Image 1 (spheres, rainbow, N blue to C red):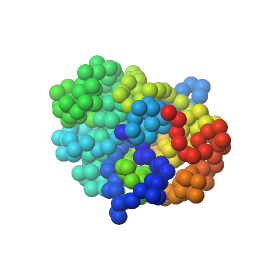
Image 2: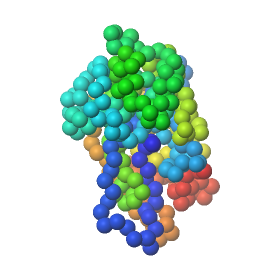
Image 3: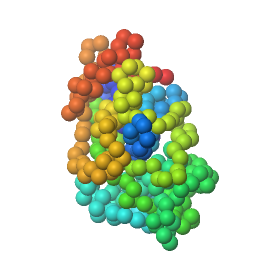
Image 4: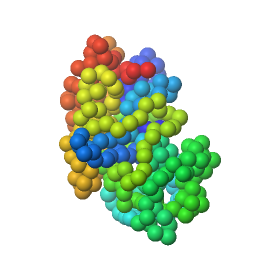
Length: 292
């Protein structure tokens, strides 16, 4: 589970439900790091072609809030749920669940763990690969994130994350909808991001500009939320990004189809996004269909 899908509207001949789907809370994390010669890099993954949701699309680690992310009884270091609730514009219970989901999904999908020792939170985990078995158990849901942290005497380092954005899947989407909160976090020293999970077939570090160029030239596909966040990171250092205090305002695009069935997305920066997307036609995805 990753970024919210923004596909073409459903076939107009197929009856639609009277009411839009209720969006499910979700969290996604932009992992960033500085380089000596290329500037900031961000970790991206490509969902493999067998997925029934956003196959072939480049995404950040993330996914839906799990029931066990709520009231998870997790000890953490850094701003508490009330601070996160104020920044995200949600109640404390949901804020706690979103931060928990952000850390859990990042570990499941990239192997990066935002945690420290319970008896010394400043002592960060520097080699999360030692928890590979627990990572697998988290992914198959035989272990909760709270159980994992408690059994390993770890504490969630919420101070390593920053709130960044909030995107809601358009009401026109009739398959599934997400109310996704974007976080940003620097790669902890000593840790490696590997993308070793069941949902992706390619993963790695790339500069925001290179990722934007790949999309515009038809070498990859980005959904509007991912494209927008990459654009916002472009040209900045990790320190600059982490110092930003973003005002989190929900963005809910609208989705329409022309007579030929091609989809158009409208949001605050949709003109630039659509210009980049349309550069790929006819060699690229003139109908908005990502590669498989």
